[in-house]
Image (cartoon, rainbow, N blue to C red; front, side):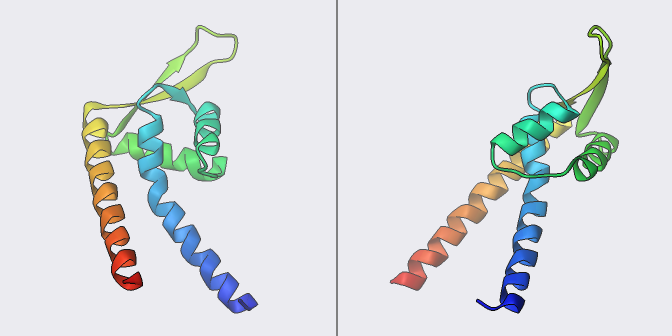
Length: 115
């Protein structure tokens, strides 16, 4: 693979990851998480995302009514925790269903191609 092909592949991989990070973030926020913990949870699951990408995403999901944010000031360092709203839970379930459908479709295409 030459450098142009590698650059094209990297671009498509980035687009694919960008499309999955919303679902991954919603899935991770089924349990209340603050920003840094969410970054760690996503990284541990194999989703590498930068803080400067995650925090605007969290604000957008909150604005869309999919997440709610609450400050916890009980600890020495106040933290903003994100968790799914009822709508966010429904949306996560729908996106997961769509993901499963797409996975089955791609698996079918790969089987047909190798037959």
